[in-house]
Length: 110
Image (tube, rainbow, N blue to C red; front, side):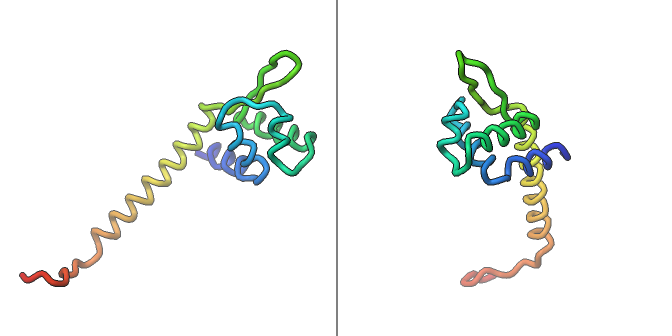
């Protein structure tokens, strides 16, 4: 799961998070992505390189343009990590509830 932690750190950077979120609806060009963030097109390309190197996005040529899209497999690793965190948190909560002394309900007679 160390890889998932690294991926979370990469995705969590605010500009990259906007780019990843924008790609949820489907492939976009650098220009389309640059229009959504307050940084230069060159900076967007640099962020996309970081995301691509991490396996979060990939690209393909379409004519003279490059279309970027999310990599489901890599995002699945992040989801598995978050699911495990969620399961652990629920397990801890259930254990705390099981250890807590029972209090009688108000209005109920034994």
